[in-house]
Amino acid sequence: MGGLEAFWARADGVGRAVALALLAMSVTAWVLILWKSWLLRRAAADIERAVPAFWDAAGIDEGRARLAANDRERVLLPLLEAAAAPAAAGTLATQAHLESQLTRRLRDALHRGLAHLQTGQVALASIGSTAPFVGLFGTVWSIYHALVGIGHAGTITIDKVSGPIGEALVMTAAGIAVAVPAVLGFNVFGKRVATCEAELEGFAHDLRELMLERRPPRQAEPGRTEP
Image (cartoon, rainbow, N blue to C red; front, side):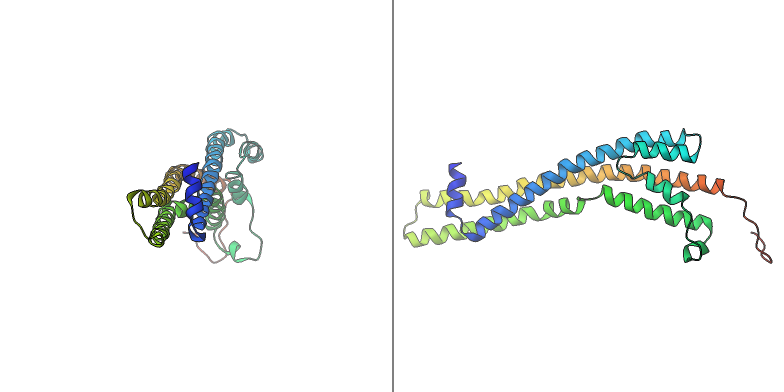
């Protein structure tokens, strides 16, 4: 603690602000890492359990109940609700063919689910990319501050230079220490989100086909020949 106390005592307002910024970034990154680990683990387990349970159901209502019971992160049930919900009459949405209506509703529901799973990814990427530069700025500023202090002292010796400069370099190490977990977390979570996205897209595609099979036969409009 002596080294940290000495660094804090020597640092001016800018140096302390940089140190506090790095601390805030580190806390934010670790909170996101822990939370997203829990979130994506739950989502992956829900998808693995809920999708087979849905397709084993005897009907849509039973399948909806099974999804509601197993889909804790609500990434699957909105897809079923989007596929089964009729569009409001008299809107532009109803003027397209049923295939296009289903595709649009499922796409929107899928994007909302993925946005939930991707929460925090931008913050992790931002911390991972900026923390080393924040630390480097803190190092440069601390070295400048230390050299000014040494210049005012009037004498330059190794013991007077090595201490302040060494403590200033801690800022660079702190920036790297903040960035590495954020970058690793971003990469790992990106892969997990991509895996969930593939499963959700497959489920949405199968739901679309199911709803198209269940639709009543379309009658040709007067004067119009079906292709």
